[in-house]
Each structure stands twice: as structure tokens, then as C-alpha cells.
Length: 435
Image 1 (cartoon, rainbow, N blue to C red):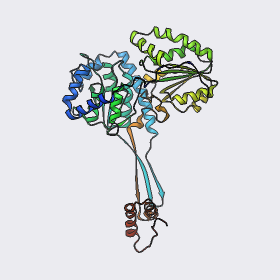
Image 2 (cartoon, rainbow, N blue to C red):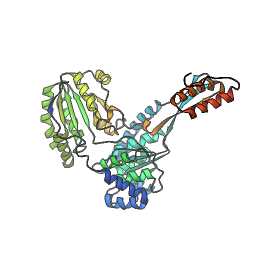
Image 3 (cartoon, rainbow, N blue to C red):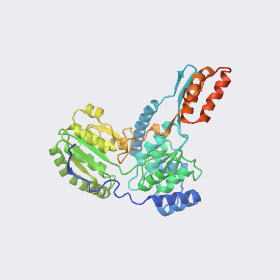
Image 4 (cartoon, one colour):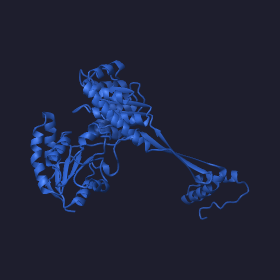
């Protein structure tokens, strides 16, 4: 399918992945062997912080007092929306019991993981919303213990608004420790914490690599790369709003791709003219990130029609997908690969990032082809059970024995044989593999 690249990326989100594996593996190994003392040494060296690692109730009260009341109200508003949506998600999971065949019963139970570790970034930006989104969903899921972990800053500690957000969202403990050492502390159960069964939340490439290495020993939400966003826009879209939305996502980081896919050349050219001035108007740090992201990673793609636009979007499988085009219901029904979808000019990724209620911890780097984002479901184990009467065991035992022998698994077959012999003495069953 023909796509005309009016702007083509120089780099991709994985171009500068770097050799982080060895560094992260070394830190994890040393911390697991050395425990609290080694984790504290890394915290002093990398976080430049030697205050309380686990915040006390007094620390939390002091941090909360430092947060302006207006911001507290905004955080509570976001928390209420996120909690409400998480509760609705949880309601979609139900426990099941059914009689598969006469006397043979099977069921499903939904059990929350016992301990969750929620990582909240605090380096380039202090992600207040991440604290609310990760902790709230774990709380609604019913996790027995929730640790929130965020990097402290020298002589300041964890951002007070992050502390307040994690606290009202329901964190049992808040830890002032960043990077690999923070992830390790939650995974290994340092400082008297329970070992986390699942690690969630965004982070830099070192945090992502730590989660990748630990996966299997613990669960994770996903392995996240740089955030990415795609906008689908037709001739009815407002080019100024399209350009503003692209820039708003490019400020995440120098390697955060943003893509515009359209079937209208005039719109594309106008947006490309607007973006540089919008970037130049940002504060210094934001401007630096957005400038490089737009220069090296952004793409503007011209397609023949809306079907070609949708196909292009599904190929990219963006983390955030915005539609600013006519017939929103068509797009909702047609699009299949995205982390979160934003339909119409009246909403924006920024809403979802902060306060709408849906989660902003989402699949990046094309992972939306096979997974969704963080939700209550990530913290829940859907497990099965079964039971049978002796009469109900009769037919399934015979089928099990014959299938097992056909597979060459004689031990499995005999586990069925002994039940038939005990429950139906004197009866003869044909249990050979060839029937």
C-alpha cells in the first residue's frame, strides 16, 4: 500500500537502546547478594540521597502539607476517575461454576496478587499521575500490600505531590529509592517489605531492563520503551490542535516518536509549518526534548484514503492513538492495534495521561499488537478448579486413559485406570490407545 512520507524518521525508538543489560544485571546481582546495605549504597551514589528509605507517617504528613490545596483537589479528582474506571473493569471479571457433563464440575476464581510494587518515575519529570494510576488499580484489585517507589532528589526526597498521590491512592508503604535499586528492593523484599509478586509502572531504560531481567521471578505489566503517539487526521481537523497535540507528546523525551497520518496534503504541510514554532515556545527542558524528538523520530505520512490510514496506524500499533476525523464510530470499529484510543478533537492524550480515568501505563514500541495497558486485570490471577462425582468420573477417566496412552504417557493413564477400578469394580473398560 503506497504511503508518501512527507517527513521520515532518521532514528527509531530503539536506535540508542545502548548496552544497559550488563550494568543492570550487575546491580541486581549485587543487591540480591548484599541486601539492604548494598541497595542503600547505590541509593547514596545514584540518587545522592541518604534520608529515610521508607517514609514514615510523619514524612507523609509533612509532604502532604507542602502540596497546594488546589493541586490536592486535582489529584483527588484524577484519583476518583481512575478508581471509578478500575472498579468498572474489575466488575467485568467474574467467578464461574458450571457442570461440564453430568457429575463433572469446573470453575474459575479471580484472585488478586498478594504484593504489588509500583514504580513512579521522578527523574526528568515527577509523574504524579503514575502514582495514582499504578497504586489505585492495585488497590481496587485487592492486592494485600502495595509499595510505591519513586526516586528522591538530594536534600528534598520524593516529590511531595507524588507522596500525597501515592498515599491517597492507597499505598501501604512509600519508598524513596530510584532506578534499578528501587526495583530490586521491591522484587527482593528489602527493608522489611514483602517480596513483590508483580512490578508495574513506567521508567527509564534501566528500570525497563531490570523488569525484563526479573520477569519470571516476578510478574510485570510490560517492558516499556519510549512513549509514542500517532494522530489520524483528515481535512476536517484543526491543524493548530493537531500540531499542538504532536508537540505535547514529543516533550516526553528526545526519543519519543510522534506520527501524523493523513489523507490531506494541505493539512500535513500546515502542521509541519506550525510545529517548530510551537516547540520553540516551550520551556527549555521541554523544548530540548521536543526539538530532537520531532527532528529525529517524527514522521508525517500521506495516505490515499481512510482505509489506508487505518491500515498504516495498525502497522505502527501506537501507544497513544488519536483520531481527529469524520465518522468516529467507523474509526472505533475499524482500528485494532493501539494502547489507548482518543476519539475526536474534544479529547486528547494529555487527558488520558493525567485525569480521565483510563490508565496511562500503556504498551509502546509496537507492543499494542499483542497486549493492552495496565489495568485491574494485570493484578488479578484467573485460576481454575474442578471436582467430580464418581459417576461423573466414569466417562472422563476413560477418555483420559486412552488419550494419555496415545501420547505415550502411561503414568497419566494409570491415574485414570485406578479410579475406574475403584469406583466401578468388576466392569471392563477398553482403555487401550487404539480403542
